[in-house]
Image (cartoon, rainbow over all chains, first blue to last red; front, top):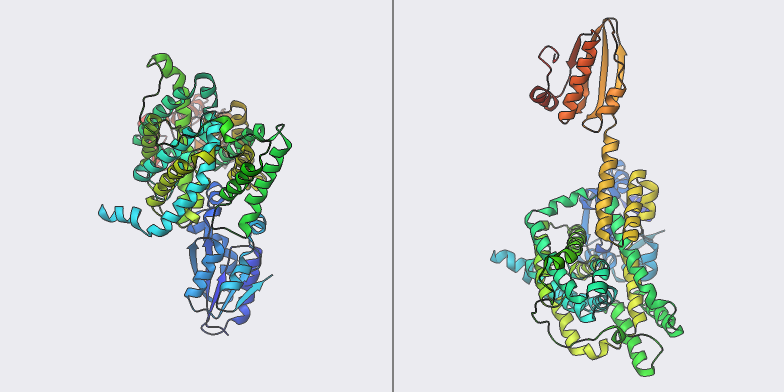
Length: 134
Length: 483
């Protein structure tokens, strides 16, 4: 069992599966930190489609929140601004987490093609063990 | 005051200067390409980008937002420049600034909330399509070399950032491919074919136009369109930066600031501009948070032009066209297709309509205004649906009104009622309705009077407080009706 788990979640189906996997590592006194990175690159889409603001960002994570509420997991949610990969890396390395869990693929396939995958960069640079969920 | 100055200028200066530098490098090709779209010398766009960025860093309302010469404004002024020349463009820019200052003082920023998302999506899509179309003449039917340079540019723009992100890909494309052109020569057009680059700072002069009523009538329609489009794109960009950074900015100060920047720019030989979505996102992503980033972007741009002006004229046009293709792809809202499938049909219609009107009129301002009018009409139609439920009991007849009763909905309300003698008391139940205006009060008066003419006793019940208040003030009903 881990004392603290970092779950990097973008609200995609893969990040939900990653959240399901964390349930296997949770015991008494485990806290999961749900980290959602707000990328300026997505800001245009969010504003045009009325999806900005903390309220809507929480709504993106609502499935994961519901899952944790159902299973009595203690968790807190953090929003960080920046480019996904380096922000997750900095956040993970600044804290002390037993494991960092994230989904293998985000929402934007085109971006992934152009920029390379976030999970790969996180796995390479985070000091803690990293679990990538398909 | 000092606190605010320190926060808005001096927080993390290293990161902000670096971000400004990155933006400056990305701005140069855009400023040149937008000048060419407008049909003016590259210097007109470059001076504009330098001046607007530097001025707005002091007077703008949104720290870390980038303003400069933009495609939206350049596309608007094409007919003005081709018919009357660059001096009329400068005069129109000065007047655009005056209009924006007035709109800023009138606090027009608040009006932005009346522009629905569907119109905004239409705006960015139309802008993207127009920028793309404007490049076709620089791409097709020129030479084989043109295609080769274009494809090479697009490959660099889209593949290189996968491996290397420190220097903006557009700059790398320009340096590498212009180097190849200078070394080996090719059959392509260059920036130099379309204008000259002056390696000097902008200087003050009054545009050479006759100061007559006629001149004013020529530039006024353009200035109005430029002012509106500039503010729409600026305030949209400000919202995007606000959202990306979870901070708030003064939209009225920004509107005034845009006016001041354009007003001054027109006197120094620059074309009008506004905030830029793409560049502002690049700035914020590079970690910019302060006005220093915008200031640096402007100053570095000017410095680079003075130092490197001789090379800039050698840039092959297909490279700029490739960068503009990337800009248009980045400007287009690719969520539109999902939006058209999911959003209410009227919203999807307004979005498409906004795009079509812009493409037909070649004027973004007309598209936005038409889009706003159509969405207002659709909203009024949707909200003007009132249901009247007819219920009969042993000793009374009840008409239940459900919906918003106002000038647009009274006809459909009254049409649903059959006026005749009922031999029972009639109760008009307004529990599910709201009366909004004088027309609504008139309609209630009419309904009561028509029933009474047929010999019925009429009572009004459950009217909410606001509605009851206007009925008492404006209506002719007496206390007997208002039980």
